[in-house]
Amino acid sequence: MLLFPQRFFPRCLAGLLLVGASFTALAQLPSAPSVPSATLLRPAAVFDGQVLHAGWVVLVSGSKITAVGPAAQVAAPAGTRILDLANQTLLPGLIEGHSHLLLHPYNETTWNDQVLTESQALRVARATVHAQRTLLAGFTTARDLGTEGAGYADVGLKQAIDQGIVPGPRLLIATRALVATGSYGPKFSPDVVLPQGAQEADGAEGVARATREQMGKGADVVKVYADYRWGKGEPSHPTFSQEELTVIVQTAKAAGRPVVAHASTPEGMRRAILAGVETIEHGDNGTPEIFKLMKQHHVALCPTVAAGDAILQYQGWRKGQAPEPARVQEKRASVEAARKAGVTFAMGGDVGVFPHGDNAREMELLVREYGFTPLEVLQQATSGNATVFHLADRGHVAPGLLADLIAVQGDPTQEVSSLRQVQLVMKGGVVYKGATEKLSR
Ligand SMILES: [Zn+2]
Image (tube, rainbow, N blue to C red):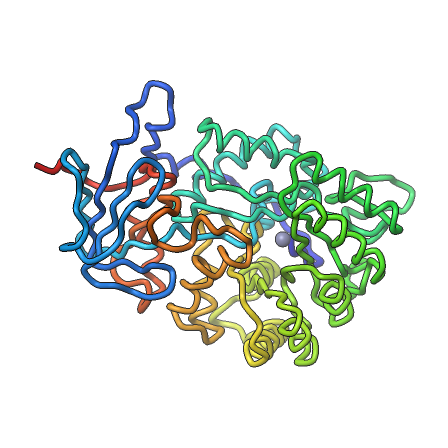
């Protein structure tokens, strides 16, 4: 979550259920037909996670990719289902690097109100729709970084998706983020004890126990807030000590789990880097020295430019009409400094702050306002995120990998707007959206 001081008005949620119109995940329901033994996908070109190959085709058998290459070199067995994807580019399913499926946009309901007044049942019901929207937008994997007051609801949500009960992306979940006592929210009167949006823990022993507790409940990654604002309207300050952060990372690492840090201050970022976190989320006030340190320690930056952009507009910035707020200019400067330092970027928008299913917004902003090429952001959202998140079974189009594939109209390596024209979504060989088909001879 990225939370600026704010107060928003609830807004009508009409339209939340519209996404089902194009949903075709029948193959996951008990009465649905099984997956064909083999499917040949014939697009205009294949983006393999790194580069574009015109005239390539992809053969899928069961849940895996079995062959990739020029059409003349890929033989389809008899009875293969053929999907013609004329004028489309086939690419690996996109990987969202920073989502909160249990949050919905703050201009609908403030973060405080979501945490304090919405029941877990309501939040989970919404989250199932969010998961479906994410998948149908072409994001077949999402790293979901904290339930923000919804306890361990992401554990069950992930199970429901994996069991085919609700359609959604493959999830990496963080359960409850770790925060230093007193540093997070919601905050009102000091006399009132309120449920918090994350798990408070302190001291070496306390943070080790909390880390273990979360992993025991199902956390794939451990999320920690290395800095936050202690009071309303003030800038962020470091929260956990160097020792606490180091213990969290060592405890998680021993169990094979990476740690990701929310951090925007130079000192918070520095401690997180030295502790050994794998990604830093936001990084708004990173300096050239800090980004150099990130590069040295192989820590990736997930810049979440779309979240800040959305929140500033919720706060009244009339984008395109009013001058750019200083925060946007500072963000652009820090992203530029990170690029100059050679820091690896993970693509993630902090979606939930803005609508689920609108995940491509981050990629559009990175291209249109932050100087990245469409090819760079595509690489980040596929092979790049797969590498950073240790997902060796996806992110590329190659034999042996999961058949998590999408097709978009046009060429997304040239035009980022292509990502808004998702024609086909396949996850594990199952088609969730689109595609006319015919059987081979
Ligand atoms: Zn977040």
